[in-house]
Image (cartoon, rainbow, N blue to C red; front, side, top):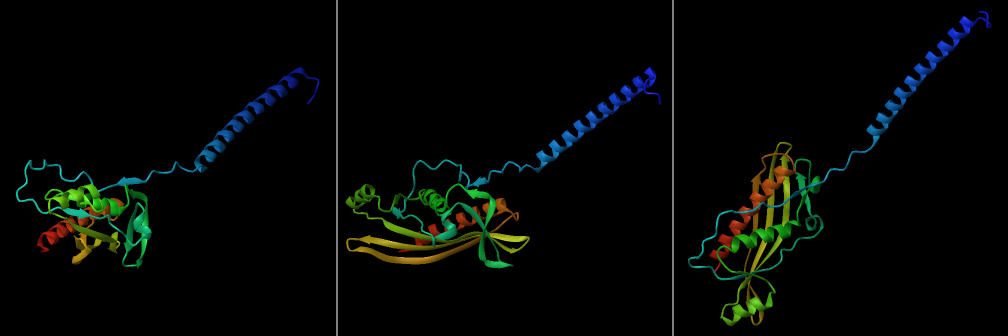
Amino acid sequence: MNPLNPVNAINTVAAGARQTRAGGRFGMMLLVALTLTACSALPDKPLRAALYDFGPGPLGTAPATRQAPLPPLALSDISTPGGALDNQAVLYRLAYADAQQLRPYSQARWSMPPAQLVRQRLRETLGRDRAIFNAGEGPALNRSAALGVLPRTLQLQLEEFSHLFQSPTSSTGLVRLHATLVENTPGGEKLLAQRYFTVQRPATSADAAGGVRALTAATDAAIEEISQWLQQTP
């Protein structure tokens, strides 16, 4: 090729321009691809754990008057053995693999520690038939004593509160409570009765939501048993 030929020079410049445009388009496509790859490598926004409680409870209106109300009762805070039950994790056990290990659901939490939820539900339920005081609630207890009625005190320990898997597809909500009923006397507390309450209710699904529903049902059943026990204890 003759470098002094004007036609050849023009063709050479045009070819170079086409190559430059092609290179630019390729570079842009490469940049977009790298950007998309970098975005896909970024971690996802962390999911917020689902928050659970026992629900609103009965929605019916309480009767304006109560027939033959039961004696008042003082209710202590519910204690626990400590450890996992003192936080808000929704716990489960794999009885078919390692029943001794409590495991938390990663994306589920109670709105408050289970012992507080159980006490709240217990107070609501027992309060339909009798006056409920907080143990150590001086003024209220003193007023009761002035009327000649010193309430008995119910003490509870929550020993188990977990979603228990008997197999990968079969599970229950398990609640175990140790109840102690004492009479308050001028000389101190007098033991009246003690009892363990162990209740299981089937879970409808093998996940945190199923465990929460089963534990709610088991708690309500245990509270009903406690209520009957209190009425039958002389």
